[in-house]
Length: 295
Image (cartoon, rainbow, N blue to C red; front, side):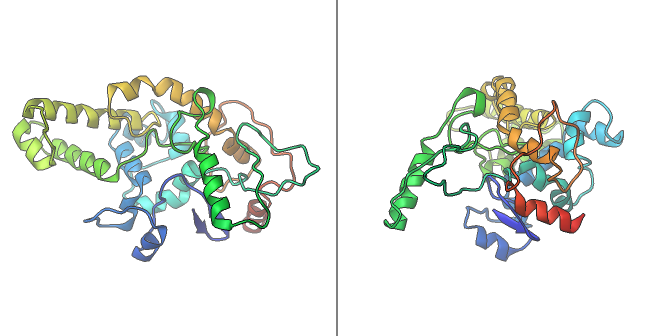
């Protein structure tokens, strides 16, 4: 999570920051040898790979026309070489979790627990050990791993508009991007040189096999970034994309409702289907106040 002005944003993974002090405050794994602190966020690498997609670049050149007009409505023009400006203007809104997902105390006589698809009611000992209670709640949440309609199983289910397809490995993302730059600089680079300069580990594979596999992974990452899905590296992952897109659409409905209710600081594309405005006056009240003060 991070604060932008008076609004607190939550992200499933580390959000990009501009200073080393902010990076240290995140208490998350970082990489050595980075030029900028924001390189330690997977969202930065998503942005970089999207910039490599020829179809998306064509769309940017055409001010949002085909072939990637729908994605452009959300991501906008990624050609300018200023990631943090893009992040503050658009990116943080794409990857943040719904603002209305705060925890609350449910009165004993209340039987309305909100959207049970995304909410869980837990009974705690009121004056018990805090550390134990937190550990138990964490255990309960980790057991909530829905499959199918509302998630892809595994870690935590994101409800952002755009969600990382798999748990990202920053070192791998950087290595693949650097390897992509090698190919761009020399499209005819021989396999042995490519494997050596890209730092590809062979294992039991031959040089030719390892180089081919790595090139295919890079191509998929670039291709699917232009479809709003990242990172896709293998054929097996690519086969899961259609079902994942439907799950993502369902999981992000609450975030879409926020946008429909006007609780959004950046212009985005039209909703895929009409969504009702938020009905509870207390929902997102802090963010409502922020919008009123800044509009």
